[in-house]
Amino acid sequence: MTHHTKQWKEAEVKRLEKLAKAHTVVAVANLDKFPANMYGSLRVKLHGKAILTMSKRKIIQRALTNAGIDAQLKDNMKGSSAVLFSNVNPFELYAIVKQSYGKVAAKAGDIAPEDITIPAGDTGMAPGPALSDLKSAGLNVRVQGATIAIMEDKVVAHKGEAIAAPVAAVLGKLNIKPMKLRLNIASALEGKQLYHAAVLDIDEEEMFMRFVKAEQSAFNLAVNAGIYNAKSTPVIVGKAFREAKAVALESNFLTEETVGEILAKAERIANELKSHIKEDAQ
Image 1: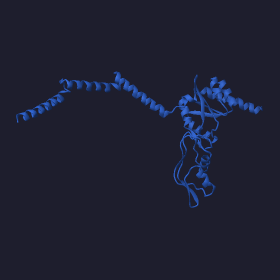
Image 2: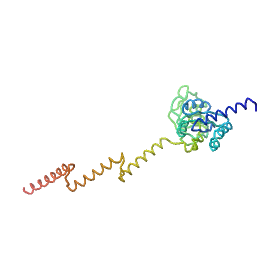
Image 3: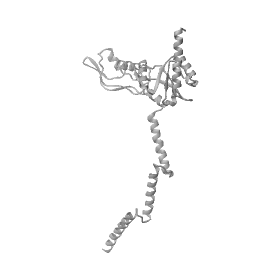
Image 4: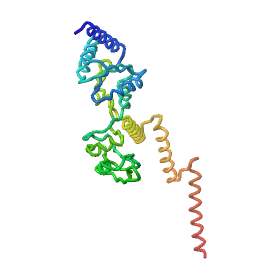
């Protein structure tokens, strides 16, 4: 090891150690398959919320050890790694990183992240071998003038399916990049609490719907059990009023709320009797 290299490593360890001590959350991420051209854009998106940095895995581990970071966090570092330092909670940090992805071309055998559709239109390709390639991907094509046209939209791979080799080849030729790649946070440490990716990866829409359902269930329980709170009280009182009024009307019990309806009912009965008396008299 040269003197220059040793100095760089020591300075790098001190830099990362300082960052770890200055932030409440430290997360490690896997860089496998992460596009290098996305690194800069992700750092920009994280500006003000987190610091993303790459270094040699052993240097990162040494720096985290010096900072007193839980050994489990370091153990989650596999292969090429990055480390994030932040003062936002781990769930928010994970969500920000999760939403930052890049699109790349598909390879044969890749699993479609969603339905992949090739739209109808002019391909710009000249007739020839390309015509057979497009047909092998299941496309309805036709030569129109000097180029090949796709006559109708076609779903060439459904979500969760492996992408066939002919389809992958055609997607590449049409410059359709269906595969989403992002930085994969393996785990994050906040204080003494370690969160793994499986815990951090929350579907926000599903979670929101769960809260809505739970709130509705709690409201229904409160109304049916007669538990009074800001939301249930108006409904419970309204229900009690309607039930009491129904009993009063049934028993002809006169109150300010029932007198009009009871008298109207009495009038209808009287008119009915009156009509029968006239018929009998005739």
